[in-house]
Amino acid sequence: MTTLEKISDDLIISIKTKNEIKTSTLRGLKSKITEAEKISGKQLTDVEILGVISKYGKERLQSMDLFSQANRLDLFEIEEKQYKIVEEYLPKRLTTEEVELKVKELIKEKQLVGIKSLGIIMKEFSLNYAGQVDGKEVSEIAKKLL
Image 1: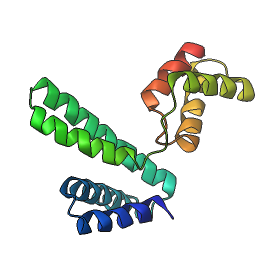
Image 2: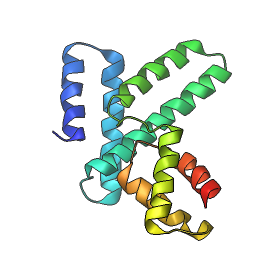
Image 3: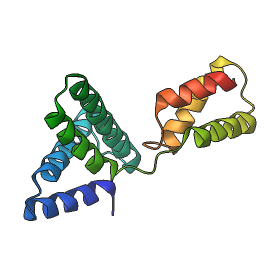
Image 4: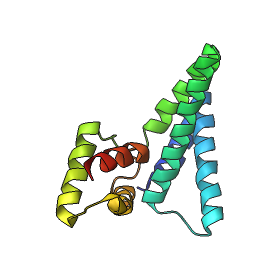
């Protein structure tokens, strides 16, 4: 079962159980995936879908941050619930230590030297660890180790 099929099945279940927050979250997620497919002009792979889901999750986190700064706890709670729903469709996040270890392994394996190798590291992580790690975190760790 692909990620998109799982989202579709869960959407049907949430509609039947009248879970409004999950229904609206999954509809929003499906619309983002559909929008990405229209832009690319092709059906997205599971890795690309994970990227869309990850981006949607980041939007929820940003909204949570803004609502907490504005002292809008009612909206913060809604965004938090939505983020937890989105998080269910993402693979387990790698810890900072795991990312650092994988970057070190990649540098050693490919014998990378210098900041010019950053692109190779970023490409490798985007292909193999989509949705599991934040690109900004990988970039910072790679710059430190190169």
